[in-house]
Image (cartoon, rainbow, N blue to C red):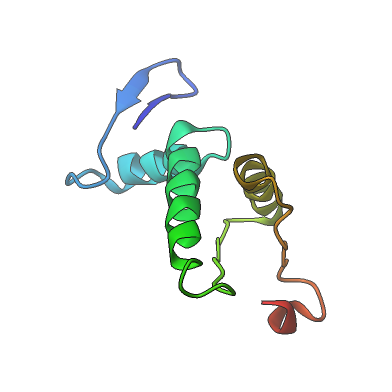
Length: 101
């Protein structure tokens, strides 16, 4: 992952490396950024795998967990762009959240 700090420094780290907690945290934020390349690639790959699974299990589904509601909606938008289908978004403060999952 590469990112620019608030001071303008460009940093690079790999999540598999032994980094400081701060660097690891920044790398995860970069990886999980809805506008970033990594999460888009992960969601695309997951969709491709789910499509394969649905050849044998037609009602198979996926679950994406987000850090907050804004990110959840952004991931849903990405998934809609990848699949052409509007995913169900379940938010933690909804009364019937558990039953919708």
